[in-house]
Amino acid sequence: MMMTMFRILLIAVTILRSDLLLSTCRADDDHNENDKDDDSLSTNLITWLRDNGAYINDKLVVKYNGVYRGIYATEDMAVGEQLCSIPSNLMIQPDKKEMMDEEDTTIYPHCNTINQVMKALSTNNDGNTNPYSEYLKAQPIGYLPTFWSDSAKELLITMLKSTQKEYQTDLVYYGLEYDELPPHGIQYKLDEIQHECNVDDNMMDNPIYKQAAMLVTARGDYEYMIPYYDMFNHNNAKYNIHHDYTLDETPEKRGFTVSKPIKAGEELFNAYNRCNICNDRLDWYGTPEMWLEYGFVESIPQRWLFDFARVKFELEWKDGDESSGEVVVNFLVPMSSKGKSLLKEELTRLNTFADTYRHKSYEEYVDMSRFEWESLWQYYDALHNAMTLATTQSDDSLSDEVWILGHDWWVQDGTLKEEDSDEHYVLRTKVTNDEL
Image 1: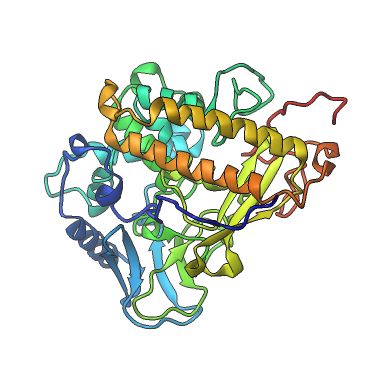
Image 2 (image 1 turned 90 degrees about the vertical axis):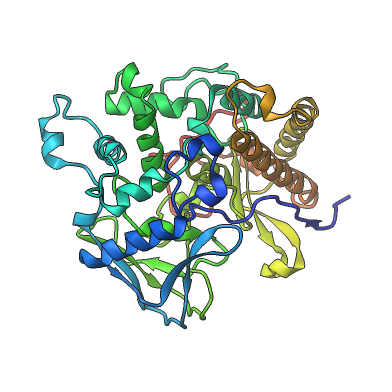
């Protein structure tokens, strides 16, 4: 019997790439070597940007709302009004001359950006560094799962059941068991960076290089690190700004304009997977990927894609009304009886995982931080909640159609017309070729 709507109980709030994650995402006090006043860092950065040719609307202010920092309007703003424009010379970006001097000419642009960020993080605070360097130095260490401690990653991999059973060279992600839960590739991201950037083991063990790589992953706009630009938080339900450039443009400047009328006191929100230049992210990039690459569990609406079960859906507020407290499932491909069974099987395993580990403490692990422990369980709750809602709200819409589709089964509602995109490679499932 189909259950009624669930009242969502997500621990997560929209702490998304907030200005100076220090106040919300610091792993522990040991990461506070460069502790500074958050407001002064923001103020100094904005002053420096304006003094050097950047445009930042006078109606904007960075403030802390009691949970996270964000950018807010101090006055009403109209559609099309410019929010900010950051010129290229104030960005951290690949050094073209340095790249031309590289022996390996196939090195990726973001690799050189990592090198540039590493230089910024290595500069001494002698009054000669620019405020953007100080801003980057103040960011917390290791807040993305890929950059967690060994014990935290091992526990997370156990939760996702990544046993490295399969090793297939034709896929981006190696060693994935068929029924691994998303996000995928947690344990391979560092290997990917090392391979693409042609970095030796000593450099990969360098904590400053790792921090630079994490910052480019979490805060970069492709291979560009753009000050102020990355302070706009993510919220797909309240997305109200617009990129004022296209991906084909050389980044002489980058910025945002208002896409919806803004009232004084409202926060300005970006969307990291539904924006006007997000392209194929619309098809596959959802809540798990957001957590993997930005370090936060997004608020409703959420998108979930389970390759092994051929299940794809969104969680949305009932009738679009957040005040209702009720979340409904919008299936983007029809749920199958097999897919439902596979999700239920994994839910049982997740329950066993929680029974085994949740009563423990991060202090029982040699190198795990409190932040890592809390973030893991925050994601567990979101994952468990999504799978529970999907399996309890699907009784009237079961169909086996998804299992007779090819490996492009998941491309149903977005922009792609191909099996694989450059980023999401369809993972194999627990079916035989005959079943396909």
